[in-house]
Image 1 (cartoon, rainbow, N blue to C red):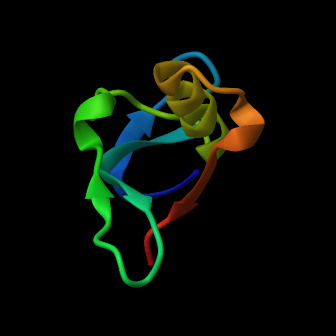
Image 2: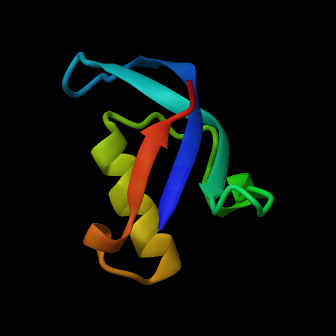
Length: 76
């Protein structure tokens, strides 16, 4: 499962002092012929993610699948 996300600026993490990001839009990418499916409602778009890996794990948990089944990439 491949998901593309649009990154929005987040806050600095109070725990790690690292930059975070919020997801503006999340969509599942399908074949070129099919329409992309907007799945932004599956996640809390106000959450500050520390990395794409954290987003991938969060999606896997929400979908009830193993994390290695999920791939994410930032929409260019």
